[in-house]
Structure formats: structure tokens, C-alpha cells
Image (tube, rainbow, N blue to C red; front, side):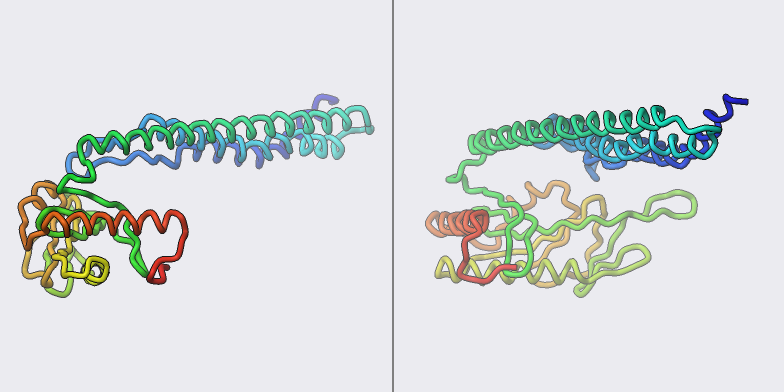
Length: 304
């Protein structure tokens, strides 16, 4: 039966079809949207709509980049199967398979170029929106305001998640996320006990978050003292969002909190006092460090 010569080569397309199904199933595997550990509501940042569009654009790029080789190889694989089962060779048919693969290659190259240009446009729009958003934030948090927050402040060997400057102290805020376990009956266990040398979670304990927060706090205190020529009150804060904190003792100069209501908490803590001149020096020093690192210029201290 002549039709079997065209049907049997489809067997060779099954592996490619299985790979295509896997690629399509995994295209939405990456989802950058996150929810608050406090109330499970989606967290929205400046430019969130463009961030969502950028995620979808990267998903399309992944889909076209992964499906392209599979689809373009399909005619060639089918043609090789035809060569095995055909009773006679038809070179015009083989040329047709080659031409079809070439056309598919050109189509997917065009799609990839389109996706790349689309991503560039979205990233440009996101950069512009973030830049304008940062300028607008100065209406609420101007540089002369007594409260100022820095993000991702680099030390000599690491990065501090957040640094908050208030009229009374400088706070080093480190954040750690830990998955909450469940009991056999499905109840969530979200209580962590803070001890002087470790964090006792349900089923395990850690000391590295305390050590890192203390190390970052001491580094910032020494660095600010050298830059401002005077001692600056610096306190460390370790935030564990979503956990209930039970305190059995913490290292000196360190607090462990859940993170909920953190802004109000920091505004009420008054371990010292920063006069206007010192307050401005601290902010200027941190702004200068961030600017120097962005320009990749050498600092007074080696950074890693």
C-alpha cells in the first residue's frame, strides 16, 4: 500500500513531538510575580505592568528559541524516514523537504529577532518608568527628609539588603526567607525561637543569618565612623517575613523581627541621636558609595 510509505515515517517525528509538548508545558514555568508573606496579596513594584509584559516576552523568546530547532528539523527527519520506506527515490521530494526546513529556519530567525527587539523596547520603557518613579519618590522621601532608605548596599565582601537612616540611628536590615513546615494534620508551624547564638526553627536551627547581620552591622559602623570622623549609632535588624518571633535572647545591637510594621518600629527606636550635620554626612557617604560602585570606580576599600 503506497500510503504506508507516507504514514510510517511519522514514527520518527514522535520524539520531536514529545520534546515540543514539554517545551510548551514549560513555557510559563518562570513566573516572577511574588506575593506578600503577610497577607498573600500580589506585591506590585514601580513599572509592574511592564515587568509582567517583560516576563511574557521572555516566555515567547524561550518558546520560539526552543521550538525553532524542533520544528525546522521535522521536515528533514520525516524526509529521512521517507528514504527508508520509499520504493523509489524522488530527488524533487527531498529538495522540497530541504526547502521547507530552510523556510522554517528563516521564519524562526525572524521571530527571534522580533522577540529580541520587543524585549529591548520593553526594557527601555521599564528603565524610563523606574527613573521617573525614583524622581517622584523624592516628593515623599526627599534627600533632606530625616528618613532615608538605601537598597543593596555593598560592603567589602558582601551586600546589605537595606540600610535605613533615621534621625536616631542607622539600621542595617537583612531579610531571610524560610519555608514554613506543616504538621501531619496540615497545620502550619511558623514559630521561630531566637537565641543568642542561633535561630531555632521547627526541625532545624541556623546561626549564619545572625552572623551575617552582625558582621554587616559592624562593618557599616566602622565604615561610617571613618567617613564621618565620629561614631554613628548603627543597629542590626534581621527580618524573617511570615514567622512569629519568640525571643530567648539576641546578640547585642541586633533585633530579629517578622518584618510586619517594620517602618513604624524603626521610627520608634531611639538608640542615639544624629544631629543634622551628621545625618547629612551619613546620607552623603552612602549616596557617594553607591554612585562610585555604579561607575565601577575604585573605592578606598577593595570590594568583592
